[in-house]
Image (cartoon, rainbow, N blue to C red; front, side, top):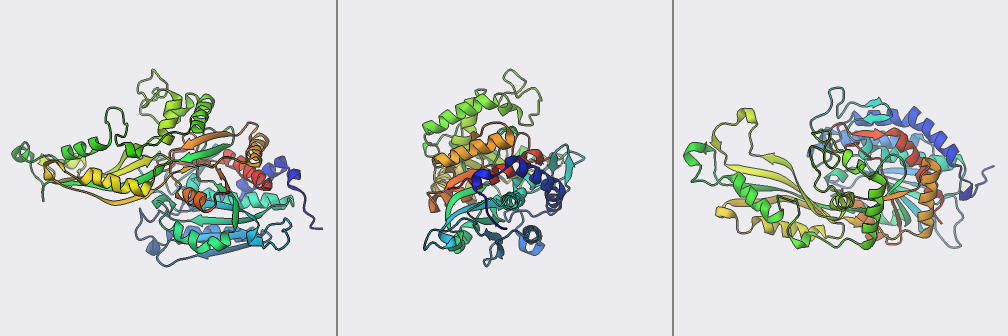
Length: 493
């Protein structure tokens, strides 16, 4: 008998038990193998095709998906010329179709993840490393496990949980890319090429986001955009004796400071140009207040401050704002500038008394969700390059941008499914949070499928430290999140 049971019969406890076993027995070992492969995103490994690491993680994930023998699953590794590959899979729905309706025209769940990684970074603990997986106390350490290699494994495990209980489910499609950490430059061509096969997307499940704590399900309600590029100031063709030249030749570093002063108030961190700001919606302000109530001082304590007492107001070092609501809005709805790299500065041990010929900074400008990144790229370039101090040679090159995202209103069924899933799997209600990072796909999907509900969640909770040293995946949370995903999919009308 292959009779299907209604979605209302989905047994959360049974699903969580089975998923816990699968994570311990199979998924953690698979992710340990994945962590060992330095599949850096093309931005950080221009020779990615020759090195073969991205192909290796794609093959590993694709082979594992096929080995699950999920009924009705079809998988294809799609390759467009000159682009990083994507995994596309689809699982036939088990619900009856309306008269005259084709499978691809039926309500579809789209599951998203990525397999490319950030570079190694420095500062890993002596017993850890970016390409060496270590599983300790429920945490799987290593680069990429939490951001976002686990997503494809969790997605298929959630589908398997539905299949195990023979619960009716809609058609499910999956898109796993390999250029996300480079700003997803290859994604839009694939979305266009696969659009007819993606179907009528009614629910998007994206597991590339974060969590305010590990005690409940967290729904991401907004994402910031980003503009990156290299700002370079040249004043000389070669270095010269600083005693001979200083006071005559302007310092490239001082000119760099003047240029950044056009952009940022160095005393407060506030971005000065009005065009990089937007009004914060009333609903998001109210959600920030509720999130601040839930998280309290943990909002500050989650970061690895140099002075360990500094996370609470009155400690040795203060955050930008000690008001939790303002801090949340700063990291989600306000623009911020980070200098993420530098050139032209010798290591201290090699720094002689030389006036350096140039200074170059890699800039990362986080944009509010409603600011258009393409316009911001052009505005930022003009702001930095025009009317250079001392008529120095100033260039802002390699600029790229990705717009942010503001979630659509939650349908009644979706809001209820999230609350029920969080209560069943975590024993607490679902909470909402804006994220300061960027997932370029979300803006694309919201434009392409305006009717879709967006389940944007993730395992990047306190101290998980994606992109930095000692990144870890909180496995107990991942197990519960996987079960919650299965629950929500089963509720799609």
